[in-house]
Length: 115
Image (cartoon, rainbow, N blue to C red):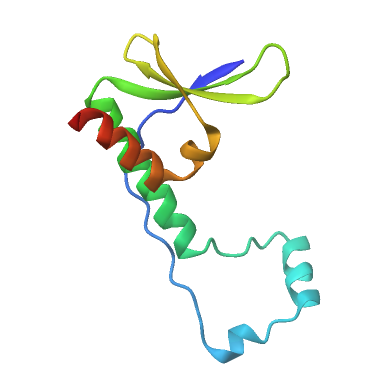
């Protein structure tokens, strides 16, 4: 199984977060109760920052005719990532730790193109 990461077509804005002291007094039980009732807790702004950074990197790679492909390794079932060209041909394997750290991957790929 494999899938390609496509660039996002729009940026996401993080919802505002209430950081007042009353919001901080929410107990673990109250959090569990609201989750059970179908209320999803807000996504933290730092997560949205990473989503936006990943989208910018995907758009940059797409503009260069490249992308990131994730596959399941045939022997051990682990997830593997690859840098591919626009035809899906392998350019080089990527370490998952680098792919997850968007800033590190952007820096590494930027160094590749400046050499």
